[in-house]
View (cartoon, helix red, strand yellow):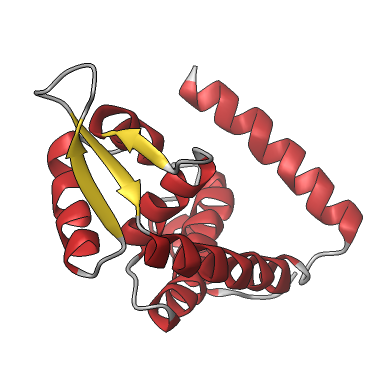
Length: 163
């Protein structure tokens, strides 16, 4: 096996604290490193479209909602897994850029609905295609069988952690 950064860290800990099982670092440490490297690669595509990852997430969640490409603030926050307070800053920036607009909900004047503008729809459609091409490029480091096995392992593990 290659002597990667994680293996070196494990070896140092094993030397310094031999009574502690450092085997989990082999998985967790590598996943953490992979996640950091992936975020760098993904952020590059978002920046090409003038977006941060959280802004991309908001636009993508609105696009996935289907025509008329809108969600209530609560639905949108749930879809991107943040609080409504955290959502506000993202929506403010996207609204200033002309990519989304807010309006009062028809059924409840206190609620807000966030919707893509035509400009926002065009941008997310182009950005999403580039994002998927980038993810394909990154995943192509594995062969198809490895990718399927990894997805199955991660799906099962995630389900157990979220349970």
